[in-house]
Structure formats: C-alpha cells, structure tokens
Length: 261
Image (cartoon, rainbow, N blue to C red; front, top):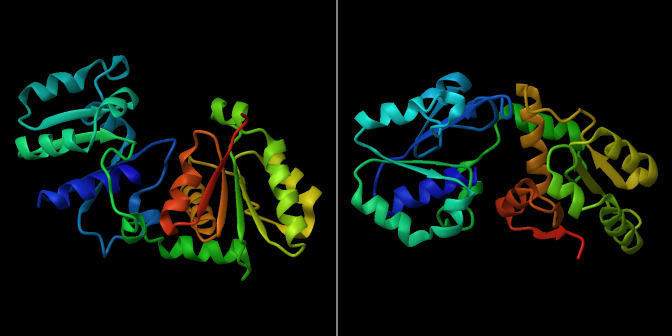
C-alpha cells in the first residue's frame, strides 16, 4: 500500500500516468478489487498471478533462472529493484532524477520509497463492500479505542523484541485508567488471541477467524482488521512490523512501537 502511495506521489509530481502491477501470490492471495474499491482510483491496477509475475516482473534471481534479466535486454524502460539496501541509500531526489530522465520507469518495491502526503493512503485505499461488511461483523457496533498488534508467527525480530509481557503491561494500564475501555487485539497467533480474551475478558475485542494470507477471506479479514485498528485513538505495534504503522497512517492515530530496551 505504501509503495503504491509513493508511486502515485512521484507520478503526480511529474504529471505522468501510473500503472500498478498487483502481485497475487500465497502471501497475498487476493486481487486488488477483492479487498479495495477501484472506481475512484486515478490509476490502473493490473493483477498478475504468481508464476507470471515471477518470470515477467520479478527481480532476476536463481528462482526464475534470471530470465527477467534476458527480457529486459530488449526493454526500453528503466527498471529499478528497490530492496532494503537500495532503500537505505536512495532519497527523494534520486527518484526525481530517475523520473525526469526516463520516459518509462518501473519500480519494484514493497517500501514507501518516495515521500507522500498524509491522507493519500486513506484517499487511495477504500475498503470494498465485503470488507465493510466484515468490519461490522467483527465489531458488532462497538468502537475500540485502543489497538494492540501482536506479531508472532513469521517475524523473528518482532517476536524477540516485542514480547507479550509488554502488551500485557499496556493493557493493564489502559484498563486501570478506564475499566470499560475496549481494546482490539490483532494477532497472527491463535493461542495469543485466546489467552488475551480469556485473561482480560470484556475489555477485549478481536476477530475470531484465524489469520490467513492464502485465501481471499483471509485477506478480507486482514484489511478489515487494518481498518478497525486505524480508527483507534492509540495503536501499539510490534517491532519491525509495518502493519500497525500503516493503520496509524490511514487516519493519523497515535502510534507506539513496543520494544525491549
């Protein structure tokens, strides 16, 4: 989402059209239109399945036999592989130069590579009807004030640096201030979800469905939870996890990363 917002900001600044290639694969198994509205978008979104993406759009690597590198010998477009190392050394001015010097620029990235104004994420990413319906099912008319995003299954840095005890400490403090406060717990770990619900009872709200990335319903749930978190006035997130950070950027809520010193 942030990479698309960055591309939109750069294209708008240079008055160039933007095309978005949406990679549908096991880690994000849904079309853009399955989870977001499209009628209002000022750009085109093309969904590309995993195998086609691997050989036509991906970074040349052993997994695709470096075949994309061969194709790009005959491609007049400028290709930029914006990985973590590239992100550390490139600034807005570098992208302005590339956009100015190249008629067609292709950027492969999962990072917010270019500065975009507050509000662009909310402007571009409007939840689809099925997501709105899922939000209503999860919240049942209640609006949580606090959100905890506890990353547990696939991010070792989050697990090591944002232990459950930090979230519990926050939760206890919030309940001590307001015994009726509603706290939304978003986590990719079912045992953590169950423990928080059983231990803190009526104060806890959560999505009862298991977190999944490999189904459309799983991705609908992920966007629904993102929207619920974004509407909370305070969001506590896990170390090196962008999910809750994006939620805070959607509506500007206070964002605090819980991390061991």
